[in-house]
Image (cartoon, rainbow, N blue to C red; front, side, top):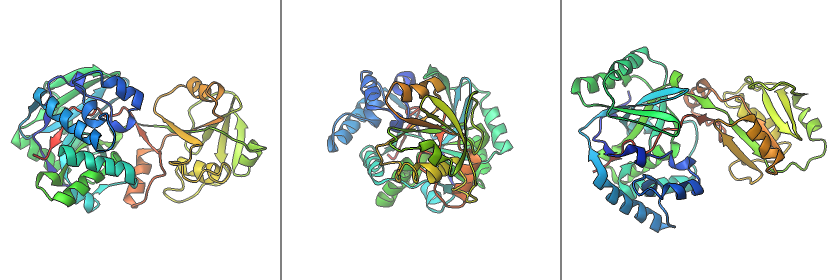
Length: 381
């Protein structure tokens, strides 16, 4: 049973100005541009400064911006994003004891540096500022409940980053209990936000406060989430007969007509040509059979010598929507040697890995569109 809890959300009165993308997809140049807006949450989630100074700056910005924020009565929220693709989910708190007990399932391990950063951020602000994105297996009762609740007028509606964003507040006691009942037997799968939830967990273990036991999450039906490819770019390939080496493990053919790759089909842009790579043998393991794993285990590590994709400077990643022309420019105009373009990892693969208590390869999923940060905060006070 996953324990769900309503919370007294803290919301800015001008969400269109205040909200930002998640902190971990914002580059420094973009952050600097956002900091020109005095009412932006960027001053809280990615403050300027070095070392301890940046956390103190976050605290000062939070205190300043609270003057333009309102405190809701204990509530559960529904958040919807609408454009060419529409996604929606509940925002509520869940017990970190359920995370500890494995009812909120993860598919990757955290890294020390970003975990310590988010732990210090939570400790300084005593708040969850970003959403932990989770999914649950399709449940028609929950989807019907969302349909019914969304017939009311949203409390927030605005356009930003190409999407219309809407927020509904549910504060009726009967409806809140109904939602809790619907979720009580469902496990939740972390889609994005492993460091955010792990940091909240460590904070709770350190301070053991009643409100700190709960973390703010977004929970969506798995059939209403979209995963886009998370592709690989190789800066330099200094290998003779590279194509011939690939042919040891893959069937290779030149592509004359570009289509989106099918499962277990890897496309490569190399020397101004697109190639199709089909593995000669498919692994059987839950993790090993994922296309990202096949590419790494059969090509990136044995041929290119890249073992740790998080640390090796010869590889970087591009997720989300980008045209093939833009990928070609990465090679033809920007000095890189190859692009590997993948079929996206499926939500079913993610759930299977989490159910088996295993870890996905790094950079396996790019959920899109990203959830806004700053629609609502959960504070521990």
